[in-house]
Image (cartoon, rainbow, N blue to C red; front, side):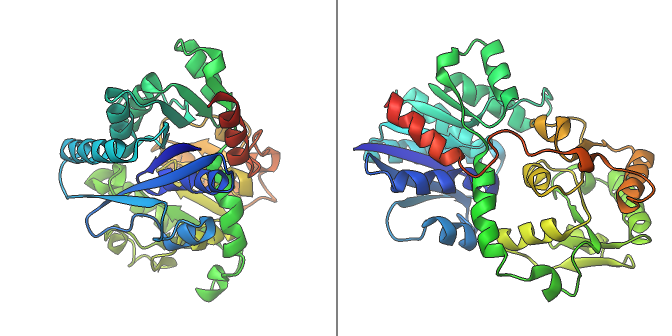
Length: 362
């Protein structure tokens, strides 16, 4: 029996880890161990994800707690914590889920100790070096022995960077495996109606509290945008890190109390559109056929733009308003989402395909 250590940091990493852990647990050839890294006082994994995939406190899971500090301090803590786990658990393979500092620290430590690394969701590139996670993705892929990619761009990028094609496996998007499973739970939660909102009667806005809009000038721009959009439809903003206080005085902007991830997915599914400055929900929006306007200059998942519902709008205020109007008046303007398709292998079976590959290579 092969022991596999699966490591996740924040929610994006956990959405990759959870379905993979579940699939491995059902296969008698593997002993999966899930390792979560969370800041002190934070939740290692949200309760609904843990419930859906059998990642409860009992057995099979470890947690490393990070103190508050700079990214470099936290990276050092991750590496020393991962080192102790690797020495005690002696896994045959470490599966790195995501591209945050937890993923980077895990890959670095495993490589230094001579433990084989598999990069999950490998090969993604935004080609934006100012993005910290872009540097992480490149470094993780350079240290990995095996690369499981979620879209064709990942294959092309890795092979162009010199990775042998027999080490690259197109498995599909694990976050869509999580979406499929979590929507079974979400369908039992009438989130929109519980908050007094009819489906397809509001725009959903998700902002990164550490992103552009934490600074004064972009914040003034988003306030103008929200006022403009709120004149046309209700705007829903999930409560997060205190930034929502700046928006609460705008008429027709509603702040929704903290939600489970399943609840957030339900809000996304029932929304008219998503306006965001983060990549976190781009794949889910594409699969749900919800128009997504991303206030970024680049994206690491080009398939969501090429055939999905995602449109990069940067911080072009005029363009954003024009595209919002296109979405909210579909009778007058036809939006790109009407032509969108679900990307290949984004079907909820990525974890099973990864396990099948592991059966061959381990």
